[in-house]
Image 1: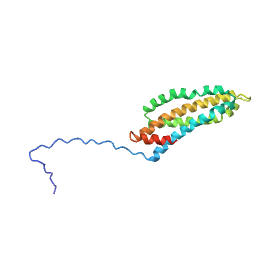
Image 2: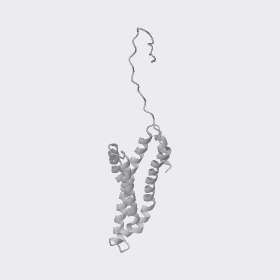
Image 3: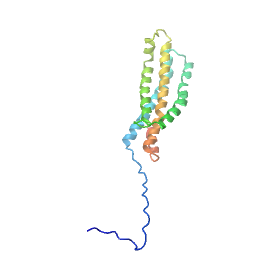
Length: 184
């Protein structure tokens, strides 16, 4: 026996059904995932620390005068002035199956690895290409090239990493995610 629905008031028409509007539920990002993403920021800070601590002493060991080290320091600000806005624009419009930010982060990480290897082995690279005297121009060129790649890669990774944190947490978790990134 089926139960019939009674009309609330006989003779009155039912009001038209309103569409149900559901508010989006804020997705809670696990702390473990936030820590993984902010660990990328830790790696970027390691790259900046490598540059700050090793540039001048290592360049002087290769034979370049102290005054020229400041010229090499111009690589960072100049590359950051160009790379970060371009990469940010490109990552905002990326339609990769891996996401908008991850391809740029992965490319930056690979370039950081390559540049650290070039910087660390620049004296050996110079020797391989013929440096035998006190001044090592080929080693200096390898070092400056590796340093420039490290600048570009750090800048290439830093912007999308911060944007990925903002994408993952939405408006509510931006404070928490950036606070975690400051740990590094």
